[in-house]
Length: 129
Image 1 (cartoon, one colour):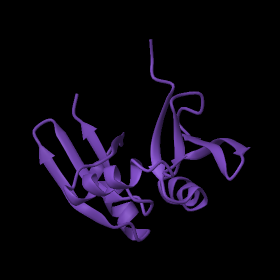
Image 2: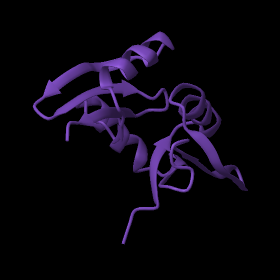
Image 3: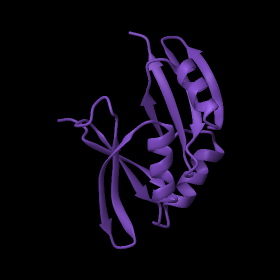
């Protein structure tokens, strides 16, 4: 068994696509119209056949209070692995990304938390082997 798809709820799919591709560096994999919304996924350019991230519309009534509660408590919705948190933090900050947590060394893990502009906090992390 393996994970092939996960999702993040987004307020605006087009805005999310721009952020997740132009800023974070993912690439679009699927873009299928589904009425008002789309089946819109991105993948890492390093693993185009790997796990897909669905940029899922946040229209369900339970999503808004859930996302707001996570953000209010500073809890990231998900985490992405990077090779160097501090370098990625600097790169993203240079692109105007707002961080709610600067890079922090926590033993074998270094992590930072950013605002994805679509209603989520996202952690970037590197774990020393």
